[in-house]
Image (cartoon, rainbow, N blue to C red; front, side, top):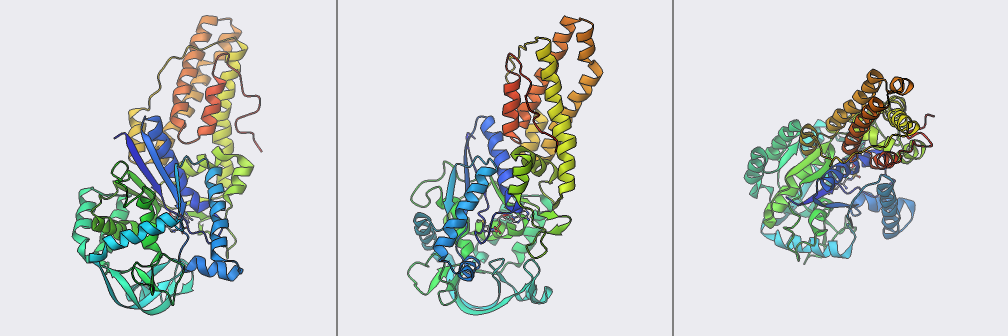
Length: 471
Ligand code: MSP
């Protein structure tokens, strides 16, 4: 497997990027960098989801054209992705003409599984999702995520016959042909699959115009999720191009809130197209602020740009990739962030580099480090199982062990006693081990690790300003 394809969920552009959006990007970026360092060629998709009522209504509210609104916000998302240091290779907007044309081709190819019928039920524009009567009753008619009453819909829509694919999807999930992570979500998805009715996949133009037109029927546009999910393959040039060079994706990163679309509708579409299913769908948890869901109305939204501007990108990536668990919901609090910054980044890593570089340079020590670097077996296993926060913990333990070794081996005493040979050996070993650890840190905090490699090039030059200055 020399070529790997990694995807991220494409955010709606009905607002500014927020801290939650960083999760897909950070996780996918670590995997992409890890694979690149392992000699693989990586295609890494990112993009924006621009159709649907949610966006259309927001633009209307602001009194701007929806085209202008989506273009402006897409730029904000692009800036955000760059700010996160994300190594994506391809970017897609669902309003790209090519994408729209390809979606129509996809629709045509699925036509044996599509039928027209009356939809009577509910809809949440916040979720851009049709809601069953059962869910409506369970939630007393109000969407728990958006705190808004569900809208009642009675309209003629096209339906996608999920029933045609249920057996194959179930088997693929159970046999691990399409792995769903974490395990407990896989069970949840198998349950949802059993209950899943055929899904409505269009809206009448009397209700929604901001979407991809259904081919050969100008009274309907596609349901936003059909168009959005297709992005993962239209970006590769499907259907005109043979995409087998990249598809199936090795990993698709999504939040737990949108896993159901990726575990039911998406595989059904792929099976209908005769395409293989993604190898893995990795669903991460939600980032909470002080234990609560972040929301503009509560006023507890954390602005990722503020964190990055104040503490630097790698401090942000460090916290996100180590202290935000990959799979479960986690809290972001300034207090925890600052503690991790000071105790771990500044003390454990920053001081370690400073101490070793200063001792080596003061004593005129040059290192011969011809080691070709490798990832350890345990690290590789964790990375390839997408256990990023655990892999990061493992490396951090090595950072802490190096600090312990310095305290035990006391190179400064060797220097004081004029034990030059011993000092040279002691420092060379420590530095060489630090550089191996640095290599494993690289997918997580790439800018810092690059600086560290620079510091330890002969002649060793201690950083003139601390890697992580304390505030
Ligand atoms: N447009 C759809 C995705 C279509 S993919 C074919 C969508 N957009 S979104 O903007 O609501 O969310 C984009 C991604 O950000 C999703 O993976 C979602 O789970 C993630 N997050 C949004 N808020 C989040 C948190 N507070 N915490 C972690 N991730 C969250 O859904």
